[in-house]
Length: 311
Image 1 (tube, one colour):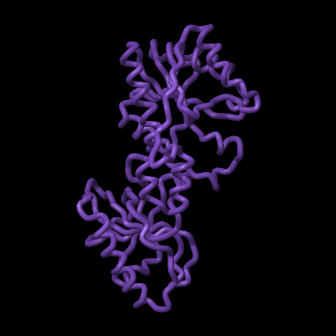
Image 2: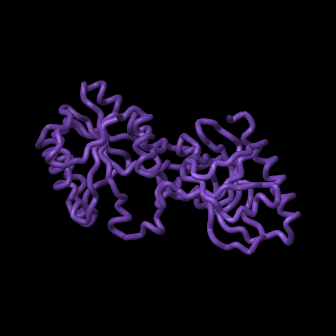
Image 3: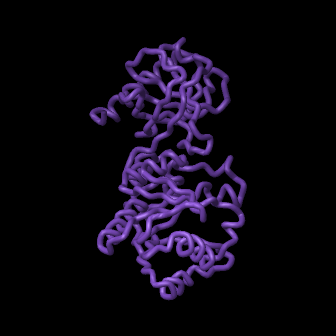
């Protein structure tokens, strides 16, 4: 995959057909746009390219990166786009100056002056440029003036839901992993490094590993206990994850920890991927450790039953 910083110093492929967006989640709606992009590229003999931003506009314009988390890190996003057959990604440095550009000026600069595209694919709700100026329809004026085609891709509907990054965030915030995964087209996942925690789990027969996310901007699902698939050193395991606190042991610090079922080994410092399959229950406070152990045994059996032959 080629990842270009979109500026005047770089040389870019000619005869391109582009689509533009944040592509957070790279969900089935995005997949439909990308498939349409590749179809038109083949039909017209053009090179399909994706334009995206190095920072989410919300983080730049609203300064709420601690609140507004991302479905994908940049590395995850690019990997997923590559899996869908995109070989050329053009990254725009999103700044307040970029945000101030009208659709007309943004398109003239990035799509024409720097890329000289021959065609553009836009999604059903795709808009770029300063919304206060509200001149998005002038993109068609540019198309006529500079002789490039504009194609509109339709939305992707799942169970009467118009799939979008917002809808997936809503599902994750509600703990509805099955719905989120269905709209994504893959199991929602998080990556990180295993670090040492309080090691309480060892004392009750359920050793856990705390995970430090590889990127603090990554979104985690709603607090609770989850059935998961754990990828470690190229091998998949069944696991259960706890997102939240440990009220039984009077620990109210937020954490993300996993128990790998039927696994014994020292994995501190290693990288791990956790795929979320189903939310099992809320975080609970038990009156004694024995009650927690009994519940964890039930959770374990439910994880084994839920994941079954998935790995």
